[in-house]
Length: 60
Image (tube, rainbow, N blue to C red; front, side):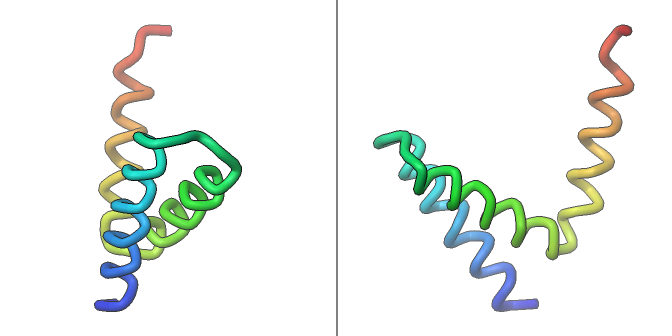
């Protein structure tokens, strides 16, 4: 679990830096890897609940 959290932080920092500097195919790879590692942490359930609440809060 400790390795997963550090990889989440690493990919998150790299993704933020790449998004600020340039947009390329590497950005898509970093975003996919960041999402993959976030999904395997304990934050995945909270993020899923937050997104579900946001979707339900939007008017139809």
